Image (tube, rainbow, N blue to C red; front, top):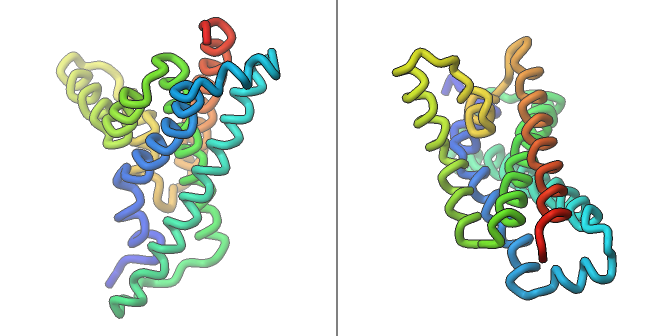
Length: 200
């Protein structure tokens, strides 16, 4: 009863489930080009392969954005059917939450794209999306880091950023944006280099 609308929504959306859905969807979108051989037609018609990657980056943004909007709307409307009345949040807060959730998910979709371009395997992309989205890598790195006294870099993983995202306090928003932008750039540039250097 003490939770606000966004806090209640984030209880379900911040678990990593949407990361897994985003990663698997992007893997299927990109993997189908290779499994069908359509990638050869694309790259013959448009020799600059970076254009292909750019189109997939934009697709990842649209796809993750649609998922995010639908998920937030569903999570805001569902309590009504169970006669729950969480404290209302303002429209700007809700829109801000959607954007701050969307950006890390977009970056995560680019990770899935990079995996497909690297391995050309849909199965491996789906498995890696599930493991990464659930936060297993972050947990393992955090455990090993604690044993050896390493800095807690796992807090900057996408899954960790999403988990602690709801209503970011002063300063936390900058970390979220920086992590989303940093990982997005790494995976985006990595995808361009992979497709330019690797035989199709």
